[in-house]
Length: 119
Image (cartoon, rainbow, N blue to C red):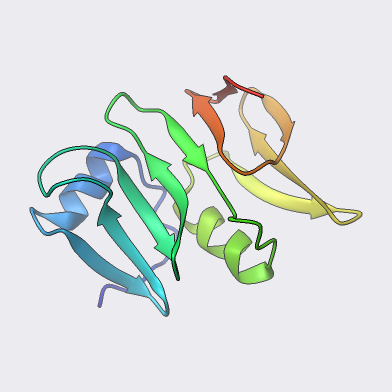
């Protein structure tokens, strides 16, 4: 099992970590995995059964807590987000800080570059 540190992943880096495998253990209950057949498609960081961060081939990123707004979920997301990004909570609400600004977190939020593109 690889040790998950602050890896600051993107699709290309995640693909290099997988090295053709379908999944790689990163940390306790956390894996890096292909969401489709091996060798193609999105790559996700999965905590238990939730893909908390998904990297798309075009560079987009999808964030999803699966309804579990826990310290562990936030930690796993923050460990792989690009430099300059972070998820934080304030007064029980979650936010995503990117170089383009701060966005209120919601499950399934989709970013192109550092800009939220839906919701």
